[in-house]
Length: 162
Ligand code: PNS
Image (tube, rainbow, N blue to C red; front, side, top):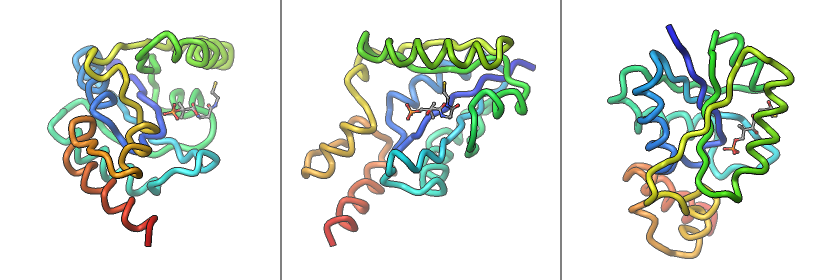
């Protein structure tokens, strides 16, 4: 049973994330999408909202389950008996920070490999941060996120205005 962890803030999940999850699900027996609390990043959505949105997006994918985590990623990965951490790489600009994290995680837990996966080219410029910014300014993000995430974003933009 080979388990991979796909960690992130998922604030919110984008089609780029979903593309990486689908790819990982073909390679591993079990993929755990691990939603980080990350309160210091001042997320738009609560952990429960992020979990619900992510679960809805992956419900057709058998090997995938979604859970929240707090604390060190490698501790969580070890507890889940994972052999790999998946991270998406969109562009060279992602690389430096991802490389640092991967090496730090390796130092903390040498038995868990970080695997970088590239989402479809069409999503290389898509990020949760930009999706939120475009949504906040009234732009259409429907092609970058699942439809229920689009609805949740519109609702959130309205709530934040009121
Ligand atoms: O989607 P993000 O915000 O890029 O995800 C970052 C995440 C959650 C993977 C990273 O912040 C993380 O691993 N947090 C858990 C705490 C931890 O283990 N920190 C040390 C990383 S070397």
